Structure formats: C-alpha cells, structure tokens
Image 1 (tube, helix red, strand yellow):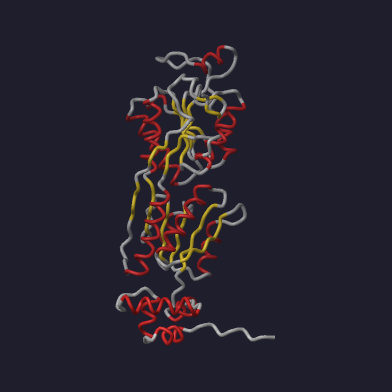
Image 2 (cartoon, helix red, strand yellow):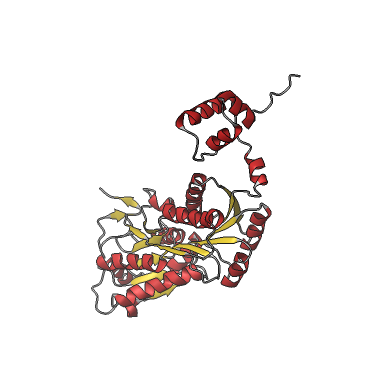
Length: 366
C-alpha cells in the first residue's frame, strides 16, 4: 500500500521561497514586515506545496482556542439569522463559532456548560434567560456578551436593540394610519418582553391613547399568538368617540369586534395571530392591521408580507463579536453596553383604518 505523502511544513515553504522560516511565518500569518516580493514568493510556494497551517498546534502553543461559544433557541428564526451574521463577523477576526442549542429538553445552563467544556474563550448568549445574578457570576470567570437583552449584571457586555423604541415605532406607524384601538400581544416572562411592553404603554400614553391600551397574555410562538387572537375579542359596541368600522359591521350581525390594530411581541406570535384571524374570516389589514417584531425571514415571504420591526441583526452580530474580541485581543476590562436603533419595515399587513382595498386573505390584490 503506498505511503501517504508527508504534510508540507513551514520549513518547506521557506526553503521553496528562498526566505527564512521567520519571514515565511510572518507572511502566512498576515503580519507586517516582509516586502511585497517576499510575500508573493511565500504565497506562491505555499500554494504549490499545498501547505496548510496547523491551526490546532499553533493555538495550543499559545493556550488559545479562538472559539466563541453561542447559545441559541433552535425554534427562533431570528436567532438563526443572527447566528449566520455572528459566524461571518467571527471569520473576519480569525475566530470560529461553537453553537450550543436550547431545546425543550436542554436549558440554558446546560448549553453554557457545554460551551465551557469546549474551552470557548467568550460566551455570546442570544436573548439570555438567566437572571442577572447568574450572568454576573458567570462573568466573574468568563467573558460574556448578552445579545438582544437588557441586563444589569456586573461585568458583562450587552449588545441590544432599543426594544422600547422599536415597539414605539410600530405604535406611531399605526396611529399615523388612523388607528386608535391598538392592542399589544405580550411575550414570555422576562426582560425582553418587559421592555417591549413598556415601550407599547409609553407610546400609547405619549400619543394620548393611554386609556385605550390593551395588553393581552401571549408568548413567543405561533400557538400563543393564536390564543391571543381569541382573547382579543372585545364587546361588540364601538369604542366611544370613533366611527364604526368594517369589524363593527360584523359585530352588529352577531360577531364580536376586534381592535383595529395589534402589535405582537415577535414575528412568530404575529404569524399565529394572522392565521387565527384569517381562519375566523377577519381581513388583514382591511379589518385589523398587524405588526410583528424581529423582521424575520418568514416575515419577508411574499405570502406573509408582515410589517415588522428590525433589530438590524448584522450590526448587532458585528458589535457582539467586536465586544468579545476586544476583551480577548485588546485587554479591555470595563463592560460596555451598545444599544442599536431598530427600524420599522412596512409591508402588507398594515393599512389605514377601515381600508379593505389593499390586501385580502394574505394575498396582495392588483
């Protein structure tokens, strides 16, 4: 059986290029120093020999793994999109990503433990659910970046969108379309839902609609959105001070009236809400306008076309990786918090109050 050819070494590349081993190492690591001719000779030699650096040996010698550990909820489309952006940002900085998922049978503590077993140098936690005290304890021994969640834990870095501002953008958009009865479908218990709920109440108060504010129990998935749709059925009499709309006409025929607009905790809850409304014969956005949150890939599908608030995941991912690598490579010790401005992406599930001409049953009309 023929023997396997020996793997080219750094010394072989240096010999082929006619330079010192130190110069070849600098070129292959992208370090400054060697001139253009030397760089070209070394890179040509490496390509001809099929040289590939032994990254593992190099990292072990430096007691580094260059691994960033990421926890994510496998059911979250937003987390999936954010993960892709995190990988791209890590690649640019010479790091790799290890993913530890949260599932129905695997909680966040176990996910974190697995990342530490892999000797990840920093932990990037997507929407962490751990209480602040546990996050602070984790940060005493490890570099921790909380992504997408406000936290008051000592020692951790935070990168998030201004969720209260984002929900406020949704409410302002709906009021600008003439809506006054605007409900909010709440999320699961935790700091993310709390901040979004506060943003809804603050916006309703700022716009003179505090008395019309309605918060309905919800959650972060489609089933909770469907349940919220049933809970949003209100008494059939029109609200005082507003003209009857199409939904009121149905109520007069013995059916209940819905609010004219709903802001959901996230896109998944909004999808469940949309499905239940349309199954019940409620036209979106003719009778009820709906806004989600996260601007997920599903929200952008032509058959869904959901108006949603974007957290700018690419910018969030870049900032999170930068926060981690600043700790690891530059020695930063003081915690930082970066708050990004969200953006409202207007699509086909919102329209002026009572306008039945824009869209019917989820398909845009000509």
